Picture 1 (cartoon, rainbow, N blue to C red):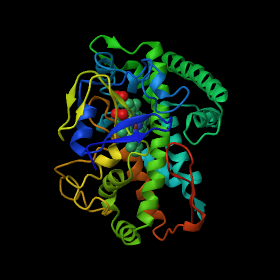
Picture 2 (cartoon, rainbow, N blue to C red):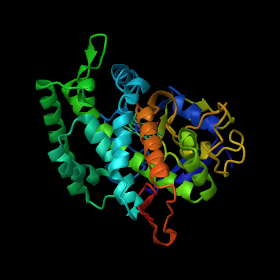
Picture 3 (cartoon, helix red, strand yellow):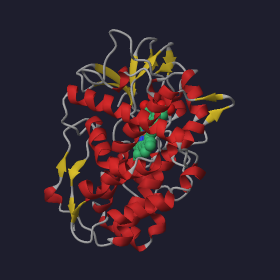
Picture 4 (cartoon, rainbow, N blue to C red):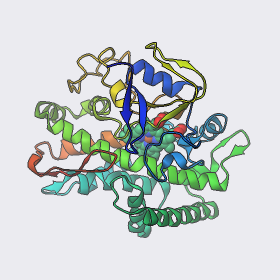
Length: 367
Ligand code: HEM
């Protein structure tokens, strides 16, 4: 493969794809690679309005605005903070496993991340169903038309504003309270930024985690020897999760970048100022120059500290804000399944797949 392969985006536009590990990291870390794709005439990822068009979303900010946001939120998603949520996340995973045959996706992989983010944000229990209905509208698997999506978006934004206001009057210890009090010196998030952050966390965190749980459990069940090894020794789960993230992550690729100065990548390939490039994280995670026999799925691969960590959570300034939270969710989800249902087996003939941008099973009956 040449270092910059041309690829067709879902919009039909053709964009060069960085595929080598070093090139992908260079694009993701480069100050000359902007997330502002809101200029006329640029290639688009999807037709119609997409995430690239929202000037307020965290993922679309460049420094210095982006640096400011991340500085303010620095203390919110620390591994220590997230560790304090682990017992509740583990309990939720256990509660969701039905006693007999169930659908791994609909009954487990979908509700778990949704319940986690609801509880973390402090969404009242009675609002849960409404909250799920709105968030469903933004998911790539949703069949809602653009108008319904827009309505869902505005209703959800109004709800998020109400939630923030409620937490201002009666502060607690939920994630929203952490975001309200988060600060960098005297700088805090404004009301609008807070509401947008709540929205970003839900849209960024829901589908990705669902997909990784579904794909990861599927991958393990496709390698019964490795599933059994995990069931025999669940302390291997964090290691297995790293290999799952490398092998099948992230469910959607990184976002496109606009190059703002002529750039030479580590492979020697060049990008001219003004070009738009897609960093292909999946390809980077399967680069044979970095990961020996990349097509081999091996839960022991990361047993020794890897000289080259995978990039499933991205790299550089936009690296996943909640990587530690996602790791805890994945570990506790898989640990719950291998300990409670060590004999779990899939009905392969009944697997149904999404037809949207994120490819994952929508249904996977297990018994
Ligand atoms: C296994 C699950 C997850 C994976 C594989 C994942 C992957 C990623 C990747 C690759 C990026 C960077 C995209 C780019 O640079 O173009 C990213 C950014 C982000 N993720 Fe995640 N993510 C996961 C879960 C979550 C969760 C649970 C949340 C929130 C609750 C979250 C919130 C975010 C946010 C807010 C950003 C934007 C950060 C920024 O622009 O500075 N993610 N994620």
